Each structure stands twice: as structure tokens, then as C-alpha cells.
Image (cartoon, rainbow, N blue to C red; front, side, top):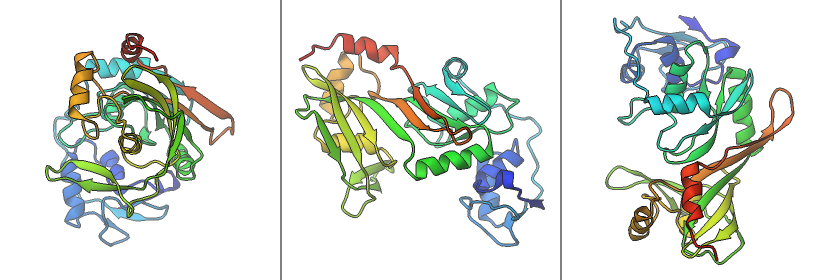
Length: 306
């Protein structure tokens, strides 16, 4: 039996068990919860259950693998994690996430940013994602180093007190200089099991402000500021404008992506450039910027400006 303290309050049950049962595969942990072998206050709960101080968790005896299998983390990711810290203190760090890596493992992917960071920093007792970026999106990613910081930062995101700014290259010439898109978004799953987000009147409220930065012959560089945090929000709103993000294989146009790929665009052109919020401990206003990857800058140099 384990009694939950304030330090683990508001943590999801699955994440708590993963930390407690090191070496036990995630699939095994999910299975023992599903079967009711794990009990919280003598009752069955879902893996998404958020613990509160005073909860009593019964964890069954689970044989840990004799050989602690190290999650494989690509050397290129390790290097990026060590050399791309934009800000760090005792409470959290902000990483300039490289494109091409998921923020966490799962769905057949053994490791992501958070697993890699934990391996690079084995002495760290606590490292958790505060928010998420899509696999092919680069830029500012917040990671908490304390449970209290995670709760405070989650509250800032929930109350829309974190200002996020992205850079995106839209396909085609976008005629407007600024537009606020407020189309509601709903998660769907298509026939292939792929998660899709669609504009739907029955969806959740979403708002993105688009500002034109530079017009090119057949593309437009924009600043996108999401006021809400829906899945794939900027990508879907850009597609709704009729100008999907270059390299977006899910919401873009195949023929357009093919043409840009031939010119060297190998990834989704979406970069989380800035984060602005009040530090939850010191109250100081933080403005953190992540420089655009050199690969994207080099591509823009060859575009014909209008």
C-alpha cells in the first residue's frame, strides 16, 4: 500500500505506476490496472485517474525484468537534448525541440523527447511534459522538473495565460494580412485508424490568429498564435483558410506537398517560435524564443519574394 503525498497529487495513475515500477513494460502496467489488480482507496479506477493527496494505492507484486532494458534513444536526439536548452532553472526547462521526434514514445515508437531526456539525465527525479508538440513540429517545449511546477504550469495553460507564437509556411499566396479563425474543432478517426481533426459545429471552441509576415511567389510565411490548445489546431485552421501548411501530409494537398518536396521541403513547416508567461514561482515575465532551424531558413532564402 502506498499513500499519496502532495508531491504526487494530480498525477495520472499510469504515470505514477510507470515511475514506481521501473523496468515493467507499459503494456503490463495498463493490463494490471484494467484487470483491477491496482486499487485506489479499495476501488477500481481507470489509468487516467488523477491521484490526490491521501489516496491509498494498492500495487500488486509485479516481477520486474531481471535485465533493465534501456530504451533506445538515437544519438542525434541525445545530442539535440544536450545542446538545445533555451531556459532552465530548478522548476522547469524549455527545450528547442528538433523536428522528426515525438514528444513521448508509444504507438510502436520506443522513445521520444521525454524518454530521451530521462536517459540523458538519469539523476533527475522528476521530468514530465507540460504540453505537447506534433512529431514534425520544432521549437519551444516546456518540461517540468517538479510536481509543483507541473501543476502550476498546467494551470497557466488551462487559464490561457501562456502566449504561444508559431511560424508556418502556408501553400499559395494568402491575400489577407491578418485573420482570426474561430472554427470549432472535433477529433475524428478515419477508416485507417488515423486520428483526424475536422472543423465541426459540434466541436470544441478554437481560436487562432494568423498574421502575414512575408509573401512569396507560391507560399506565405505567417505568424500563428493559438488562443486555445486543440489538437492540430493551427494545421486544421490553416487548411480551412485554403492555404494548408507546406509539408502537412495529413491536412495538406498531395500535389502541393510533392512539388515543395522536390524543392527540398522534407518536413512540416511549423515551428513553435515563442513562449511568453509569468514564471509560476518568481512571477517574472518570461519571453523565450527558439531560433528557426537552419534547414528552414536556408529554404526560405531561395524563395522568390513578392
